[in-house]
Length: 374
Image 1 (cartoon, rainbow, N blue to C red):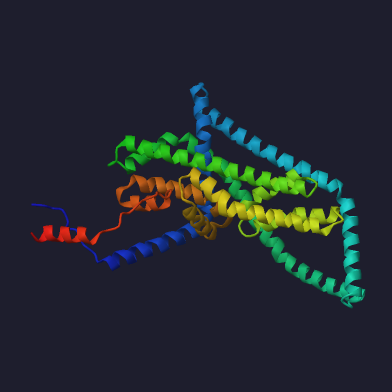
Image 2 (tube, one colour; image 1 turned 180 degrees about the vertical axis):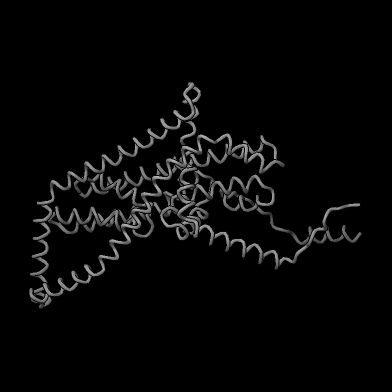
């Protein structure tokens, strides 16, 4: 007697509704658990990046704990070096602060004189209007400062958790691998190892592509600023390149800061307008060509899919979603390609192939129909 339960064939409409409900629950869960999942995913990616260094140190008979600590120290030292270079530039700016203040006061006097002569606004009215806006800003400042402090505190606490996550992931990597073997016990371990290797290569290639985009955008910004003869062109150029990770306001922050600096240090205001034009042009190139083709090609995702997933993950997790969009999608593509029912979706995300479809001839259809009838 067969004890197997009979299969239940549900209507297509019920299956579609179940899939849509599952997607809604999944998206809601991802948004609800953002503060927990984002640092965890960053830690997983960072652990995958540090694994070759850790593995090499272990081959040199360095204990695993010591190898992990050495890897983390190397990363922290690199980040500290970047912050040090930025702080040196900021200190240089503070040395020129008196000149910038004098230039700013001159521009402000010129604007007041223009408003008084051309717009018939007395200086007394200008001062009262400025005081009113200042009072409104102060009243709103409490909430702004509070929200900023909360966001900064949450960010710092999140960043502090990432090294701890990375340490334990590298320490218990064999344990996690055994866990996955047990979960997918029906799949051969060799096949799982191939999938793990592809996921690792995808993450590595994505980071290579991301660094390439930042370098290319930084170079383009720097060249444009050098043509305009802007001071600190290299710093402002690469500052704007890093700001492309921030959606919507990234280009604003990246262009207004050097534009304001140029306005205060250059007699010609058109140069500041040219700075904004350079950053806007480079941003258009980056968003439509550089990132989709360089980063998208590194992770084997077609440009259209890359743009769509960037928008979707950006709406879901903000800045973190933009950074994680392509690697997560590339990992999903590897999984889709490995699972037979999901391969069409992996094909849809991948590079578009030049598939030629031959036109169907009426005579061929009639011939096949006759064979079926016979």
